[in-house]
Length: 299
Ligand SMILES: Nc1ncnc2c1ncn2[C@@H]1O[C@H](COP(=O)(O)OP(=O)(O)OP(=O)(O)O)[C@@H](O)[C@H]1O
Image (cartoon, rainbow, N blue to C red; front, side, top):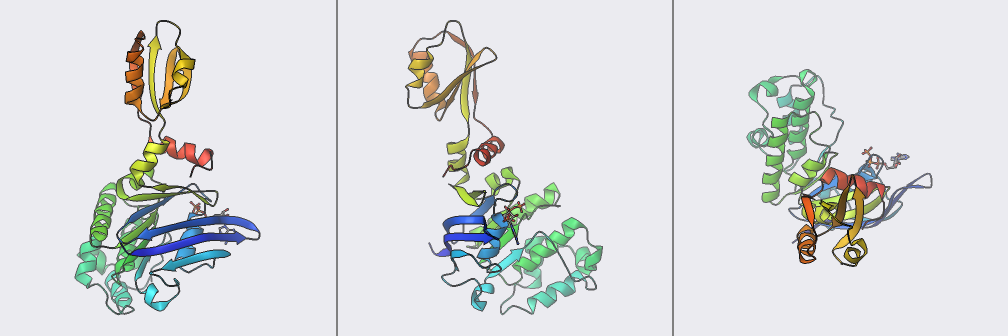
């Protein structure tokens, strides 16, 4: 599959402070990639360098095997940023027509409407009369106007209601199926889990995890088996088992952290221990995210 983005040892310093440090990854055609991380993690700085809007201190970015500033590359990129600024005096339809005129082979107006769900009503409105959610729809349409092969969405669903969100992600899926590459940043972890084929997790300027949502979850979620015991629990013996990482006692229950809850249950029964009130907790993505961004350095 064609490589769309190649980032090699990318570093950005602001006044000697590293905002992005030695980040490398590549993205292939058709991937839907979520860029996640807490405030100040380096997401925006990385995206701005990918777009060629900020020069790296060191390292290299290439889009479609060329520098991001090259005009032919720019024509293949669509961007929707957080701050939507539209030309106030114009109607939505006029703004769309104006932007269409900038591109060599733009989408038809009908196609833009179909993709973004803009209604006749909204098209006739002046942009300053739009609600926040409607403005984002227009901004989405403008990102798509040049029929781009690569699209960047910065926190795309902020201000959208749940229906608009669902529609937006359904459209993103269609775009990916049509071979477009999509990169988005979000603070909604569930959204990254649902919509992305891959998650890049940033923390303190570094890329701390890179993988499919399920791989990341599998590696990071704290899965536990907990239960009550009649007699003393043979902790030392269980800690020697390779599928068990931590054993603790909480509120009169033994809690075993593990990557494989099935094997823990099997081991408990093989040992013939008298246990009761077993509970299995598969962990939550939100917690995994917290854990990862607190504990640094998981890669
Ligand atoms: N133009 C700038 N000048 C100085 N420091 C900057 C500049 N832009 C970003 N930084 C710093 O670089 C670090 C990374 O910022 P960045 O905006 O990339 O983070 P982010 O992950 O996008 O955060 P958020 O989720 O809050 O948007 C922060 O410490 C920030 O203060």
